[in-house]
Image 1 (spheres, rainbow, N blue to C red):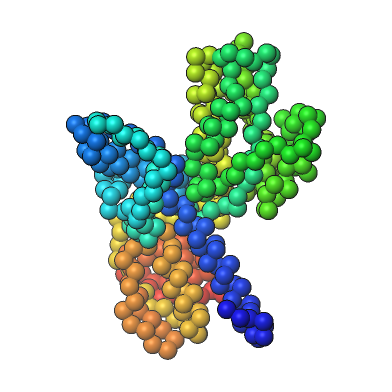
Image 2 (cartoon, one colour):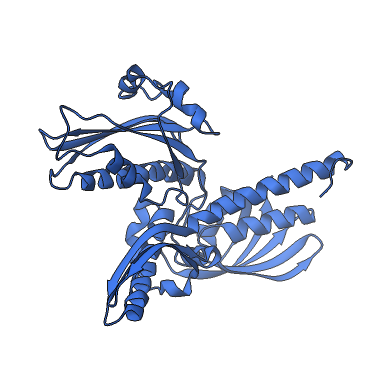
Length: 365
């Protein structure tokens, strides 16, 4: 496309659309559960593969739901355990696989249909967040306490623990980097209590300026692994230190557990902050029919109001019954009915008034 001689408004429009497309593609990534291990045995190789994929996609679906929903809604997710994940799958990609005559083992990427998953959560009144944070750079460091040696976590095992996770598709994506030459021992030591101690050195690794040190300190004598996360993620600066029991016969397990919890911590921080910025979400309660007469002053205002209603968590079966100049009739179902919807609508700039199943909506802007 040639835009050299295009009017400035067209150039701006193209730029906005391009950026919007990138953001949308990034947020769609959260509906893929990648790097997921599956394994099964059966009477033959074909049956083993079918079983591994069937069980794997159901388990991956559970992981996706926990990724999107806040911890406070995990109990409500139990009702979705029986939903067939196969009906929501949009694609499966193989990262690695191996099999025998009676077994199948693989690492797969399960992609789920974002529209269907969103609609399912809305229908059940379960709040969710599908906005992905900007990528955070992570520098992995190993600092053995004492002599290290046999029974201690190694640098290779610490990196492998992270590399085995789904680093790209989560709500808080990360990318692993080697320590820059400018990172000194004093910076690493200072990071234990000050998240900005090493930022000047490591922040350049990320375009967003978000960077963290993940410092693993295995202590064979006490059989403990201490992990310190220090720096800035998508929420802001923080320092987090946790200690894990380390089995001398399998020190890598402690590293794997620490990496999983660290990544979930970043995701949890992002959900906690972005979730508070979202409108109140209905949780539980039967879906009730609501008829709404929408008044608007322009087509732009109508489109904005329509999107706000459609995207509101909890809304299901949204339909437009009639549209004319300055007004539209819409119908939808919402947990708690019109009164609950009016409360949620007010937080996004919509004045919704009425009673029973008949309501009138106007923009507050």
